[in-house]
Length: 135
View (cartoon, rainbow, N blue to C red):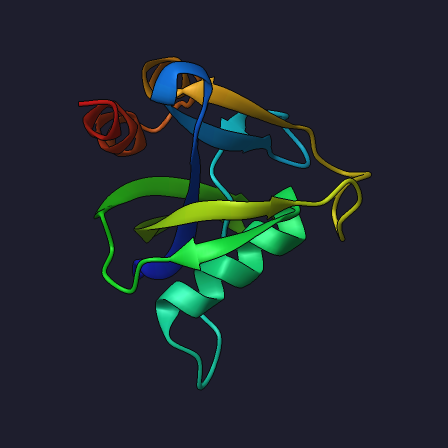
């Protein structure tokens, strides 16, 4: 099957002592930790689509950089089987964190240090991206 493309937001903030923190969310079915991601939106730049995913999946808003910080690949599980996906990831500097959001009942969210976030996710390419943020 042909590779599909997705977009992701990597929501970040400065925590105690100015340390970079990354917000992760759980997937709906397997409850794995991931960054908010989804399909590109028609007539919208990819970084704006990533911002929409961050709001829907994690309840955060902020300034999203228009250039991706990198890409990672994973296999998306679907009823019809597994689909190879390449994800373009956009850094989002979080300015607002809502107490309720569209997928709040379906997902958990938590802040991690960049290193902890890299250990919490499964995808090797995403691990590398998150590890690089902490440097």
